[in-house]
Length: 192
Image (spheres, rainbow, N blue to C red):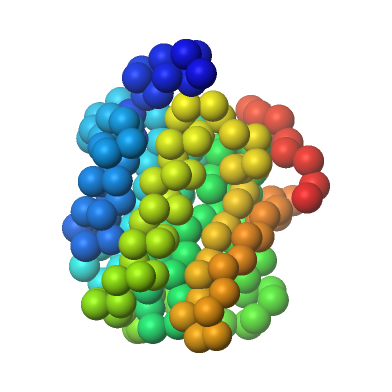
Protein backbone atom coordinates (compact mmCIF):
# COMPACT_ATOMS: atom_id res chain seq x y z
CA UNK A 1 0.00 0.00 0.00
CA UNK A 2 2.86 2.35 0.80
CA UNK A 3 4.43 1.73 -2.59
CA UNK A 4 1.14 2.54 -4.36
CA UNK A 5 0.78 5.72 -2.29
CA UNK A 6 4.35 6.74 -3.17
CA UNK A 7 3.77 6.04 -6.86
CA UNK A 8 0.59 8.10 -6.78
CA UNK A 9 2.29 10.95 -4.96
CA UNK A 10 4.88 11.17 -7.75
CA UNK A 11 2.36 10.91 -10.63
CA UNK A 12 0.36 13.51 -12.52
CA UNK A 13 -2.61 13.46 -14.87
CA UNK A 14 -3.93 15.95 -17.41
CA UNK A 15 -7.67 16.21 -18.07
CA UNK A 16 -8.34 17.72 -21.49
CA UNK A 17 -11.69 19.30 -22.21
CA UNK A 18 -13.80 22.20 -21.06
CA UNK A 19 -17.11 20.38 -20.56
CA UNK A 20 -18.92 19.64 -17.33
CA UNK A 21 -17.72 16.04 -17.68
CA UNK A 22 -14.07 17.14 -17.73
CA UNK A 23 -14.57 19.37 -14.67
CA UNK A 24 -16.21 16.49 -12.82
CA UNK A 25 -13.35 14.11 -13.66
CA UNK A 26 -10.80 16.72 -12.54
CA UNK A 27 -12.53 17.24 -9.19
CA UNK A 28 -12.88 13.49 -8.57
CA UNK A 29 -9.19 12.90 -9.34
CA UNK A 30 -8.13 15.64 -6.92
CA UNK A 31 -10.50 14.25 -4.28
CA UNK A 32 -8.88 10.78 -4.47
CA UNK A 33 -5.33 12.13 -4.35
CA UNK A 34 -4.28 12.36 -8.01
CA UNK A 35 -2.22 15.44 -8.86
CA UNK A 36 -3.83 17.14 -11.89
CA UNK A 37 -1.39 19.20 -13.97
CA UNK A 38 -0.84 20.40 -17.52
CA UNK A 39 2.86 19.68 -18.05
CA UNK A 40 5.06 16.62 -17.62
CA UNK A 41 2.17 14.22 -16.97
CA UNK A 42 2.03 10.44 -16.72
CA UNK A 43 -1.50 10.00 -18.06
CA UNK A 44 -4.27 11.96 -19.76
CA UNK A 45 -8.06 11.73 -19.76
CA UNK A 46 -9.44 13.40 -22.89
CA UNK A 47 -13.13 14.25 -22.84
CA UNK A 48 -14.83 14.33 -26.24
CA UNK A 49 -17.82 16.52 -27.00
CA UNK A 50 -18.93 19.63 -28.83
CA UNK A 51 -17.50 21.98 -26.19
CA UNK A 52 -14.42 19.88 -25.53
CA UNK A 53 -11.93 17.98 -27.63
CA UNK A 54 -13.09 17.36 -31.20
CA UNK A 55 -10.26 15.29 -32.54
CA UNK A 56 -9.38 12.28 -30.39
CA UNK A 57 -7.33 10.85 -33.25
CA UNK A 58 -4.95 13.81 -32.97
CA UNK A 59 -4.70 13.27 -29.22
CA UNK A 60 -4.06 9.60 -29.86
CA UNK A 61 -1.02 10.46 -32.01
CA UNK A 62 0.29 12.98 -29.49
CA UNK A 63 -0.04 10.57 -26.56
CA UNK A 64 1.46 7.63 -28.47
CA UNK A 65 4.49 9.76 -29.36
CA UNK A 66 4.97 10.69 -25.70
CA UNK A 67 4.43 7.16 -24.41
CA UNK A 68 1.76 8.22 -21.91
CA UNK A 69 -1.39 6.39 -20.88
CA UNK A 70 -4.50 7.89 -22.47
CA UNK A 71 -8.19 7.51 -21.61
CA UNK A 72 -10.73 8.85 -24.12
CA UNK A 73 -14.04 9.73 -22.42
CA UNK A 74 -17.35 10.19 -24.23
CA UNK A 75 -19.98 11.97 -22.13
CA UNK A 76 -23.62 10.95 -22.29
CA UNK A 77 -24.89 11.40 -25.87
CA UNK A 78 -28.55 10.47 -25.38
CA UNK A 79 -27.83 6.77 -25.68
CA UNK A 80 -24.66 5.94 -23.73
CA UNK A 81 -21.55 7.27 -22.00
CA UNK A 82 -18.18 5.60 -22.43
CA UNK A 83 -14.60 5.69 -21.27
CA UNK A 84 -11.93 3.83 -23.08
CA UNK A 85 -10.25 2.04 -24.45
CA UNK A 86 -7.54 2.70 -21.88
CA UNK A 87 -4.53 3.24 -24.14
CA UNK A 88 -1.07 2.21 -22.95
CA UNK A 89 1.44 2.74 -25.78
CA UNK A 90 3.19 -0.47 -26.71
CA UNK A 91 0.82 -2.60 -24.61
CA UNK A 92 -2.74 -2.07 -25.79
CA UNK A 93 -4.98 -1.00 -28.62
CA UNK A 94 -4.88 2.71 -29.36
CA UNK A 95 -7.84 4.95 -30.22
CA UNK A 96 -7.33 4.28 -33.95
CA UNK A 97 -7.51 0.52 -33.26
CA UNK A 98 -10.81 1.14 -31.46
CA UNK A 99 -12.19 3.11 -34.42
CA UNK A 100 -11.09 0.44 -36.89
CA UNK A 101 -12.66 -2.36 -34.84
CA UNK A 102 -15.86 -0.40 -34.17
CA UNK A 103 -16.31 0.43 -37.84
CA UNK A 104 -15.74 -3.21 -38.80
CA UNK A 105 -18.48 -4.33 -36.40
CA UNK A 106 -21.20 -1.76 -36.95
CA UNK A 107 -20.35 0.07 -40.15
CA UNK A 108 -20.88 3.61 -38.81
CA UNK A 109 -18.96 6.43 -40.38
CA UNK A 110 -15.78 7.44 -38.59
CA UNK A 111 -17.27 10.87 -37.74
CA UNK A 112 -19.81 9.22 -35.41
CA UNK A 113 -16.95 8.26 -33.10
CA UNK A 114 -14.76 11.32 -33.45
CA UNK A 115 -15.97 13.92 -31.02
CA UNK A 116 -19.66 13.00 -31.35
CA UNK A 117 -20.21 16.35 -33.06
CA UNK A 118 -23.43 15.35 -34.77
CA UNK A 119 -25.07 13.97 -31.62
CA UNK A 120 -23.62 16.41 -29.14
CA UNK A 121 -23.34 15.76 -25.45
CA UNK A 122 -26.70 15.60 -23.68
CA UNK A 123 -26.60 17.90 -20.67
CA UNK A 124 -28.57 17.23 -17.57
CA UNK A 125 -28.59 13.44 -17.12
CA UNK A 126 -26.59 13.48 -13.95
CA UNK A 127 -26.56 9.76 -12.99
CA UNK A 128 -24.70 8.60 -16.12
CA UNK A 129 -22.51 11.71 -16.15
CA UNK A 130 -21.37 11.07 -12.58
CA UNK A 131 -21.01 7.34 -13.09
CA UNK A 132 -18.77 7.59 -16.16
CA UNK A 133 -16.71 10.38 -14.56
CA UNK A 134 -16.19 8.22 -11.46
CA UNK A 135 -15.22 5.27 -13.67
CA UNK A 136 -12.70 7.43 -15.57
CA UNK A 137 -11.22 8.76 -12.31
CA UNK A 138 -10.96 5.25 -10.88
CA UNK A 139 -9.24 3.92 -14.01
CA UNK A 140 -6.66 6.76 -13.96
CA UNK A 141 -6.13 6.31 -10.20
CA UNK A 142 -5.59 2.55 -10.54
CA UNK A 143 -3.12 3.04 -13.39
CA UNK A 144 -1.06 5.72 -11.64
CA UNK A 145 -0.97 3.92 -8.28
CA UNK A 146 -0.47 0.25 -9.24
CA UNK A 147 -0.43 -0.02 -13.06
CA UNK A 148 -3.37 -2.41 -12.87
CA UNK A 149 -2.70 -5.04 -15.59
CA UNK A 150 -6.45 -5.30 -16.33
CA UNK A 151 -6.64 -1.70 -17.60
CA UNK A 152 -4.80 -1.69 -20.95
CA UNK A 153 -7.44 -1.89 -23.69
CA UNK A 154 -10.40 -1.70 -21.26
CA UNK A 155 -13.50 0.08 -22.53
CA UNK A 156 -16.47 0.72 -20.19
CA UNK A 157 -19.82 1.69 -21.69
CA UNK A 158 -22.97 2.60 -19.78
CA UNK A 159 -26.13 2.56 -21.83
CA UNK A 160 -29.21 4.57 -20.83
CA UNK A 161 -32.06 2.40 -22.13
CA UNK A 162 -32.18 -0.38 -21.39
CA UNK A 163 -29.69 0.42 -18.65
CA UNK A 164 -26.60 -1.69 -18.65
CA UNK A 165 -22.91 -1.35 -17.97
CA UNK A 166 -20.48 -3.41 -19.98
CA UNK A 167 -16.75 -3.87 -20.05
CA UNK A 168 -14.92 -4.81 -23.23
CA UNK A 169 -11.22 -5.22 -23.93
CA UNK A 170 -10.30 -3.72 -27.28
CA UNK A 171 -7.52 -5.64 -28.98
CA UNK A 172 -4.81 -4.04 -31.04
CA UNK A 173 -5.25 -4.01 -34.81
CA UNK A 174 -2.15 -5.90 -36.04
CA UNK A 175 -1.17 -3.41 -38.73
CA UNK A 176 -2.46 -0.20 -37.13
CA UNK A 177 -0.49 2.67 -38.63
CA UNK A 178 -0.92 4.76 -35.49
CA UNK A 179 0.30 2.39 -32.78
CA UNK A 180 2.57 0.02 -34.68
CA UNK A 181 5.65 2.19 -33.95
CA UNK A 182 4.67 2.31 -30.25
CA UNK A 183 4.06 -1.43 -30.22
CA UNK A 184 7.60 -2.11 -31.36
CA UNK A 185 8.85 -0.36 -28.20
CA UNK A 186 6.68 -2.28 -25.69
CA UNK A 187 5.31 -5.67 -24.87
CA UNK A 188 1.96 -7.11 -25.83
CA UNK A 189 -0.90 -7.59 -23.44
CA UNK A 190 -2.33 -11.11 -23.59
CA UNK A 191 -5.52 -11.86 -25.46
CA UNK A 192 -8.63 -11.54 -23.29
